[in-house]
Length: 246
Image 1 (cartoon, rainbow, N blue to C red):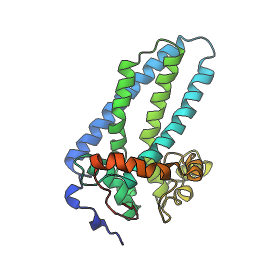
Image 2 (tube, rainbow, N blue to C red; image 1 turned 90 degrees about the vertical axis):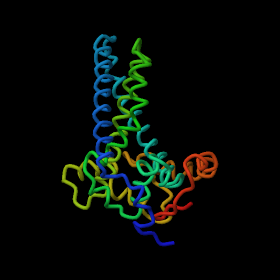
Image 3 (cartoon, one colour; image 1 turned 60 degrees about the vertical axis):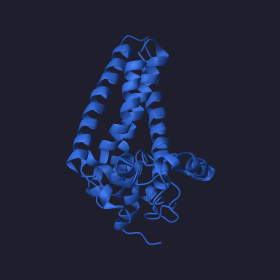
């Protein structure tokens, strides 16, 4: 079945509306406010921690947080591509529709502004971010590491859609291409694997580091049917759009 942009009902397209711009702007503002609070707490406790702790704690939290962000980006991408309806109230147009639309028009993400590209990730991160800051006070090395890890993991999630957008940009600035070539962030050649039929692999879009491993183990393919049975009654039946199968 060939797909066109009309395959997704525009009645449910909230992107670009005044309401969504307010949601994106407020979500991003609150996200950065609590990221600052969490980072401040980590800094203050790190400064008072035993000498040498920062030499391993922050780098380890950074690496593990970034890898976790890559995995979560892939898992969410997999779910949004394969499970749930674009008609599901709020969640469908805000989180599912952009992924389905992306397979119809991969360059659409490059035409969205900074708020529209990154606002939804800020919104979905807030419960974890606020919960960590409020309910997990820093009292020792373990809680200090956890706070740093969560803060860096969620900052990686924040950057994910921006990296994804740059991977589709036809002519990104030279400094972005140089970073992409290092493999530190998602690159266009790597991400092209996902946009090759049957569109069922290389879902991770932060750095893409985990894509080869997940492709070899077929983890997402193995999870698809069990998750579909559990989530479809809640999220609705997947629309067949742009190569995304029911």
